Amino acid sequence: MSDCDVLVVGAGPAGCATAIRTARAGLSTILIDRARPARTWAGESLPPGMGKLMGSVFGDGILSERHHRAAFGTRSVWGSAELAETDFLTNPLGHGWLLDRARFDADAKVAAATAGVTIATVRRLGLVSRASGWQVETGDDASFTAGFLVDATGRSAALLRQLRVARIDADRQIAILATFADDGDAYCGTTVEAVADGWWYATPLPGGRRVLAYLTDDDLWRQGERDWHGLLGETLHIGRCAGSNALSATPRAYPAATAQTDQLFGEGWLAVGDAAASFDPLSSQGLASAVLMGARAGEALVQPDRKQAIAAWAAAYAMMVAEHADLRTHYARLEDRWPVSVFWRRRQQPDESLTRPRWVGQRKQRV
Image 1 (cartoon, helix red, strand yellow):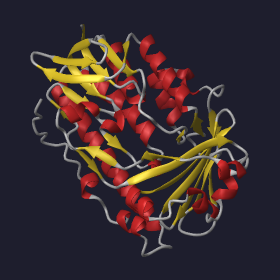
Image 2: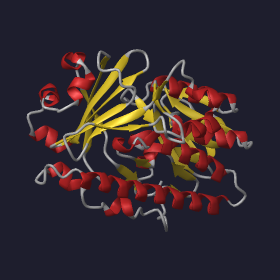
Image 3: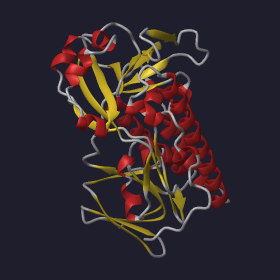
Image 4: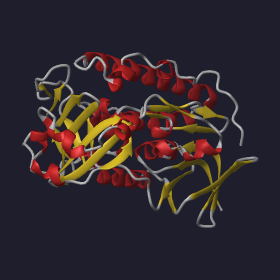
């Protein structure tokens, strides 16, 4: 049995950011890492200005160009048939980043260990219970006890499910995605194209590969022809940008819904990252938000008035979710070429579950 002040379950960037902050402040912190992490898609991009944030949390070398690529703009086909470019070269915040996500996650865990976090690798999670403190069982006949528990288990929200905290989905979006050897055009940035029942994006990756994804709603995908390659052939620009290797790539489906937990924190626990809120991939906001709010959660946990600090952190998180919801609606309304499209109509009215997160006046959970 291992004891600690803070137990963070989930060793992705959000969990690492939280653990680093608490460990640096002198709280004994254990970070539980799954031996077989949840299936996630390759590739991630960061908008301009995120280098400073990532460096402040994980160290200056986290975004080395030896492992990641600088992004110099984005291109979009949105609201018209034209391919429009936003150039980062004149952006005062500098360039963006195209990440080797596996490398980034591994380096985040190294940064956590360097900060004094104990990292425990387990096969699976077991029961979570609470008496005088939290107790978390694992599939390795091991257990951990902690004064405070952090759910950083991603979209699965594994701990919150055991606490019987609901998850609210704002849509049914999925990503039908493939990675392959890159023979597309030389543009060093993400290209996005809206289509009748969703949207596509293509991004070059470090190491000479490319990610290509079609995002639509799960029910629309199941009801339609479900021919990823055929739909790619109907695009105006992105098929050409992605290159010919896309035509022989084998895509897989991944969850990509915009969602949030019904309860962000409770007595002795809180949630960070995708367990707290999952953002639409269109925003490129997910990773940056997870790291930012994970670090701020760690800072709240070390304050003398922890309860007040967590409440302030939750209010800031709710504001971020609401701003994302407004931006999501704004971009959906810009795409008016398919007025009868179910996909676009679903997104063109604000979702109250996002614009008014129910994180004030937290209800008491059952354990």
